Length: 112
Image (tube, rainbow, N blue to C red):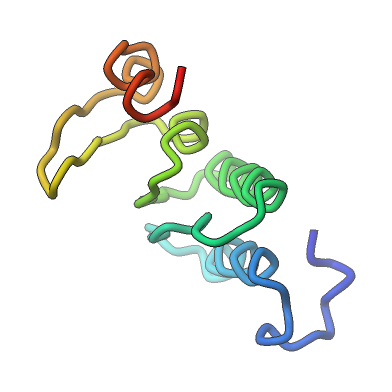
C-alpha cells in the first residue's frame, strides 16, 4: 500500500498513510507486542477499511496486537478477544465472535 511512497518522508504522508506506516513499521523489528491506540481516529471511511485490513494481515503474520479502538464494528472482525469498556470499567469481555453476537453489543456498539 505504501510502496509508491518509499522515498517520501513519513511527515509528508496523509493521515491514513501515516497510520498504515505506524501499524506496519514495528513488524520490521519483530516485536513481541504491538500497541495501537485509536488507529482509525480521524480517518476517512475508505482508509479505515484499508487500515483494519493491514492490522488483520499483520496479526495473521503471528504478531500479538493490542488495539484500543472505538470502532467496535471493525475491531471485532479482526481480534480474537475483546474487552468492552464503559466509563473506564469492563462491561463485557470474551471471544470477539461471541461478543459480536450479543444483542447488547450489536445494539449499543455495532448499530444492528
